[in-house]
Length: 160
Length: 263
Image 1 (cartoon, rainbow over the protein chains, first blue to last red):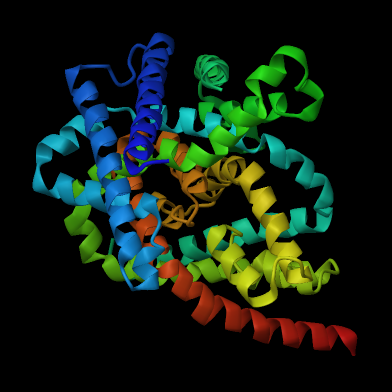
Image 2 (cartoon, chains in turn orange, red):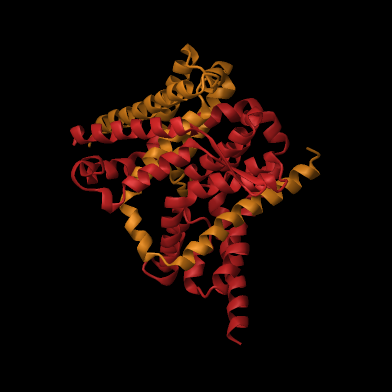
């Protein structure tokens, strides 16, 4: 696939993603009229999210040529967050626009596609022993409780 | 193929509609109340319809190989707007975050909890080398790469990490969306839990921070800022924590526990 076609594809997938967010926010309003309204700012916000994501993808491709393994393998997700953080520090307009997009409305469509994407993995579950299932509970709890305890202590010491 | 993609998009819209209409549900269990978000309904519905049992006739068009591949290949791109949203949450809070930056850094050490809590349990219930793969971390791409490089995936360690990867992919988000509010009811500060939410997996972090937001809507901005700053830090430091701390710690603990077990 040529580079240009690849970017058109990314652009369309991102369009699908922000379109789904808008749809979700509308449904949320239908269910609860007091939730985040859809305004002109929301549309600007979605445009920002789309653009920042594209910039992040572009940067991550550029970095594929860097010699440092760590930078080359830094995830696209990270590049997008950094791009957005820097641009949001530059202008408050971006912050206001993006915050007009309801946060929870972003999460529902993502998990919808996450659920679809694992369809072929469901059968792998049979190969997995129940023992690992039990261990998984403790592994997930472990990282979360561990970080929460250290964070709690740290916040206490820093007087927050 | 393009035509088939329309099926999955319409299906996704319907799932979102149904999940949002069910809405946020609060389920009391004893004196703890567990909030269930629409995102949990969305993932449960799509997983149920994805079972082989349903994939006949019309559903085969919705859950076609092409559509499933599309979802898994592009899931990361579908997630990007969420990552971009986090920038807008961190930016207004950047001063506060930098002022307690050291807390963010040391709480990365909490990720060793996978070894500290997971490994003894794994050994206790009779796992051996699989436990190395299953408890090194939360079993995402980083651990998968490390284990496959060191032991290959076709080893006991490899099977351990793959199993954890599968379980995490299927149930990770659901687990964290339930677990985060439980800890909140144990008296943890919401800031600490928000920081802890940056576990290193996008969907798990979203699920954990989303339930925290749903339980404390006035704190939305702080919760999202802390969760995403910590997530970003995990993507920087996570590999180092794993290689230089988690892996050696795991080896020491493993030798100690298995030897004692054998005598």
